[in-house]
Image (tube, rainbow, N blue to C red):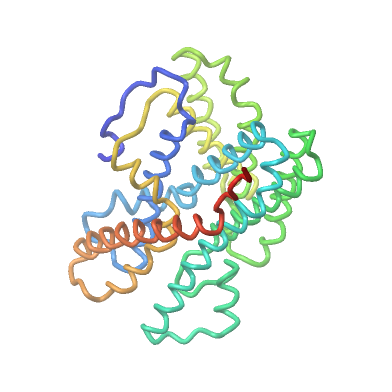
Amino acid sequence: LVTLWGLRPRKDGTHLSKEQTCAINGLFVLLVFLRHTVDYIPMGRWDGIFAHINKELDQLIVVPFLFYSGYGIMRSIQSKGKSYVRSIPKNRIFKVWYHFAIAVGLYWVLSLFLHKNYAPLRVALSFTGWDSIGNSNWYIFATLWMYVFTWLAFTLLPKRQTLAAAVTAALCVGYILVLQDLKGIWWYDTALVYPAGMLYGLYGEKLEKHLTGVLPRLLALMVCIGLFALSFYLQEILFFREAMAVFFALLVVCITMLVKISNPVLLFLGKYTFEIYILQRIPMLLLKNHFSNPYLYLAAGFAASLLVAVGFHKLLERLDGVIYRKRRKSL
């Protein structure tokens, strides 16, 4: 219902605009919240629809985040060039890591309050994303490595963007192969979505020149649905599971080429995607066992998560203002 609010036919080419991608991220971070909530409460007799959708979507609920991230970085590299690539370690890698590290610090304080004794090594590794002390971690771990791969590839190949994007994709394949024997499949089964977003950033405009009318866009949507359905059916094979995630991303793009999905609720959630994602488990842990009714728990946890997210966002803005303040130009 939230998604349907404000839904209308697309009459422009802004399906990858900041507003549209923000709204889509808002929708999927809401699904992430619901996914994590059921880790703490049982689903009732009226939750069958959600249980089915939640099971079938599985890791696909993070696909838009990765795709838009790869797309956005590629477009920034195209417009800003070497200066943007040089800024990736500080403005992307370090920034995401220290935001994440502060959140992990809050979980560590929470663990002390809840009298949970974690081994020092586990606590230390949780600040890298490799382990967890109650927080979500694998997505941040993957994102940081995607940024590292991007920086390496485009530093080594500054004038060959297509090849650099291909190298980034190859490094992502290496990431998959390394983690296969070390972590669960959810750590790497969406890893190719990020470089797919980069490639779309490179060639999306050229492709979309052939999709200027409603009928060509409907045809593209049908093709994506078919390829997604095929890979969904064969997802037990890792290659097709990775392909399924990529086709799902393209499916979302095709849908937003046809309709605009945007409203104040989705835009609000999209603005605080990182904060909601990383902090939502704190209210969930604190409120656990305090509500006999799971729906009241859900409502209280959601409201608390939004409040914490907004407060944390403001804190990070102030810290960013100190760390990334621009030097005044000498007069």
